[in-house]
Image (cartoon, rainbow, N blue to C red; front, side):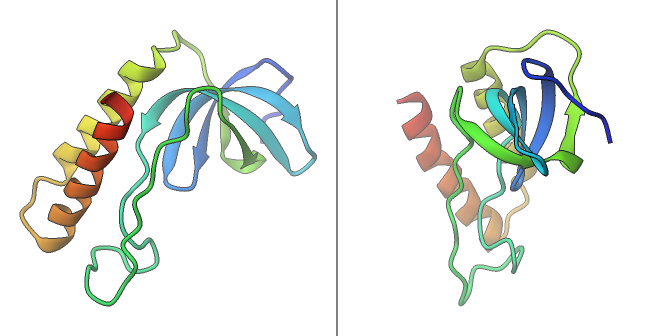
Length: 125
């Protein structure tokens, strides 16, 4: 497991999303990561019952906001080298990638797509 210093750029998995961020603090077993861009939008639905829509609480999961700080387990923080994309552009790309993944016509994908469309309205107006 790599050790990072304050200000280092990293990729970090948080819940079901993946982000580019900056190390803001080391809290022993976690890093506090300040979000700079979105690589993968969080999954929609009930994570304990993937693909299910009946008798489950279907969660709408937002991506972390620009400069939002998250406590991330050190085991899922990796170094990032490269240009950091614009947050809004990276968010749009991550949403589009997830929507494309949900193209298969079934009840779960339809419901997840509706959740993403609602989030797009919140994100982009």
